[in-house]
Image 1 (spheres, rainbow, N blue to C red):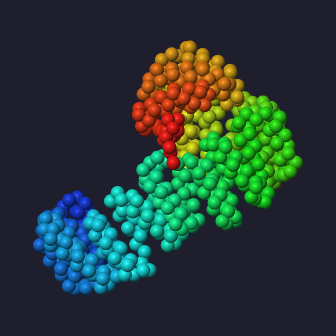
Image 2: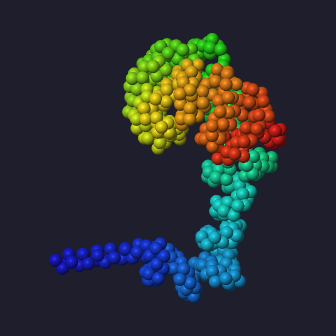
Amino acid sequence: MRYLLFIFFCWFSLQIKAQEPQLAFQYFNNGEYEKATAIFKPLHEKNPYNSIYLTYLIDCYQQLQQFDKVNTVVTKQIENFKNQQYLFIEIGYNFQLQHQQEKAEENYQKALNAINQMPSLGYIIGKTFQDNHLLDYALLAYKNAMELMPKANYNYQVALIYGEKGEIENMFNTYLDMVLINESYLPTSKSYMGRFITDDAENENNNTLKKLLIKRLQNNPLTVWNQLLSWLFMQQSDYDKALVQEKAIFKRNATNIDNIIDIGKIAFKNNSYETSKKCFHFVLENSSNVETELTAKLYLLEIDMNTNTSYESIENQFQQLFTEYGKTNKTIGLQAAYAEFLAFKKDEPDNGIIVLKEALKLPINEFQTGYLKTKLADILVFNNKFNAALIYYTQVQNDLKNHTLGQTARFKIAQTSYFKGDFEWAQSQLKVLKNSTSQLISNDALDLNLLITDNAVKDSLKIALKTYAKADLLAFQNKNQQAIDTLQVVLNNYKGHPIEDEALFKQAQLFEKINQFENAEKNYLQIIAINKDDILADDAHYYLAELYVNKLQNIEKAKEFYQKIIFEYSSSIFLVDARKKFRDLRGDNLN
């Protein structure tokens, strides 16, 4: 029994001891510095090697303006531990808090001198200067240590300090030096430099980095400088310039063409079809891999489909590809694209469904199955077979819950329910998707949820929203004129309703699709007239400017509306593009 009592007493004592630091930190965080000092002082005395207790004890004394006690405790620590000369910085900072700058600098210099005697102290001395926001001294410490120890690399810390000081060019150069020393630092350098650049090619920091890279490329033509230029141009959506850099890299080492394929895909996704074409033509000229060739040819075919090439020509291209590559599990993407072409372009949904059902019979994996079922369900929605479509979407969502395909299927379930007018079920699915790992799906879910929420408030029966959803479905089915007419019903019957601007915008987009550009212009102008602060107002300005420059050949009007985005909608997602296009039209020399 005594033995058990002894064990319990020891255990209880250990628990009390373990709680002491936690209590001290709690007092410190609450600003109760006297109470914190009463605990940190004995903790430091019992654990002199624990720098955390000493640091907090110093902070407590300084908060209580007991500066002499700081000098006493730190001086004693340095006397007892000769290798802790970084503590001269704490003495110096203590003098600085008392406005005794001369004494502060004397102690800072002692810390710097310690590096000359023992260069390995460079890091801890530099870090201590940093922690006390003495950035110029920290730079001296790190640089001095690297001079004395050529193998030491504190460039990362130096770059961070330059960034904190706002010396952007020095910061960029330091990150580039890191890459020069070892290319394994490339991802880290990109990550940190990326925080200081934007998607605006005219941004001062972007231009600074571009000039530094070009200068280095001229002086020392390493592939890594091309890689970084390509990366910078991609951040700015300058796909053509990125392609030039990747071509230069490929000519030096023709082993990997993946980066050029990636640029082609991104350019295609952002409707930069000419650059995308250049990428995939280059791929075809420089790759003998069958899978890569097929990818390139399929993208080129997709570009033709999106640039109004005749259906006959597209059909012939598909048949040539099937003759060359066959209908196997290696050509699933080609078969899906053909099915979509049959349904959405040629208005032959039944034939598209047959193509996909045949493809599903092939020996394919679960992801290919999910992909094909999603495409099949899309065509069933196109064919007004909503229940059948929902079955396929649900299968994909259940089978691939944590995959992007599963999340896409869940969004399609919500969208189909919305088309049917079942808004409550649609929103229940959309709420789940707001936290989707895919930013694109998350944004689409937020947009659709916002549309339903905003336009259900003033319309308890949701008649206007149901009519708009019907128009949305018709647009999805490429029944553009019917969609326009249905939207006109909304505009005629629900003037002043929140859905009015949505209907005007949707109708304008459809007018553009059927080349009724003057009608589209009227709609955009009407959106702006209703409320220039509306959520769609900057969209209307941008698409109106695009309409003037690309279809109505009115450059002055285009400049006017691009300029309005620049000066009146500074938070618009179109700001960077509008600024660039305005400067192009004005004839500025962007190079």
